[in-house]
Length: 360
Image (cartoon, rainbow, N blue to C red; front, side, top):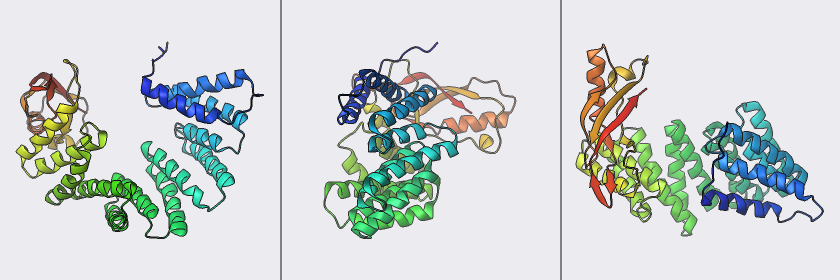
C-alpha cells in the first residue's frame, strides 16, 4: 500500500503558483469538477516526480489529458504538460512523440523560426538534460542556438548563453574537444557584456573550464578557474553549485597530492551540512580500487571506518568476508584515500565513528 507523502512547503508553493498561472485564463463555464481533477493530478505529479516516478507518470498523464480539455490542444500550457509527461516516459519513441507535440504547439503559438521560440527550446533542453537525456537536449539547444544567431547575431549574449549550455552537456557526456571549443566561444562572447545574466554565465564558464581540465587530468590547470568561480559562488556557501565547485577543487588538490588544500574545502562543505547523529557521511572524493576496476564484483564489499575532523578515513576494516588478499589490500588502499566533509555539531567539527561505504 502506498503511504501518502506530505509535501514540503516549497513544493506546495511552487506547484500552487504554477496552478494559479494555468488557471488564469479559464472561463467560469468550465466545471469545478474538471478543475478539481486537474488540480489533484498536477499536485500529485509535483509531489512525486523526483521520488516516485511510476505514480508521477500516471499523474502527469492525467494532468496532460485534462489540461488539453481545459486549455485547448494548441495552448502553451498544454505544451508544458506534454513535456512533463514525456520526460517521465521510459519508451523513447513514445516520449519523443509528446516532445514533438510540445514543439509543434510552441510553433503554432509563436511561429516557426520566430525569436520567441528560443526560450521554450532552451527550457525543453534544460528539462531533458536534468533527466539525463543529453542527446535530445543537444538537439533542442542546437536549434535554439541557430535561432539566437539568426535573430540576435553570432556574438550576442543569447548565443553565448546557449553555447555555454551546450558546453555543459558536451562535458557531461565526455565530448571534451567540443566542450573546450564551446567554452572558449562562450567566454569570448559573454565577456563583452555586463548584464547580470552574462556575468553569471562567465562565472559558470570558469567552473566548467576547471571541470574540463579535471576530465583531461590536467589538475594544476584546473585550480585557477575553479578558484575564480568560487570567489563568486562562496557568497552562497550551502548552494549546490558552491558545493560542486568545492568538490571539484578537492578532486584537483587530491590528485596533486595537496591534501591540506583539499581539507579547507572538506571543512567548508561540512560546515554547511545538517546531518543526523547516526547519518552516514558521503564521500566528496573517491578512488576506485584497482582490483575492482579490472573486473566485475560478484558481491558487494562493505568497509567500516572512522572519519576524523579533517575528513580523512581512519582504521578501515572490511566487513565482507573475502578470500582474495590482493582484492582486500586494494580495497583498503582505496578507502584510505577517500575524503569526506566532516560532521559539525553546534558549529564544532567532530569525528564520526562507525561509518560504512559499500563498493558495488
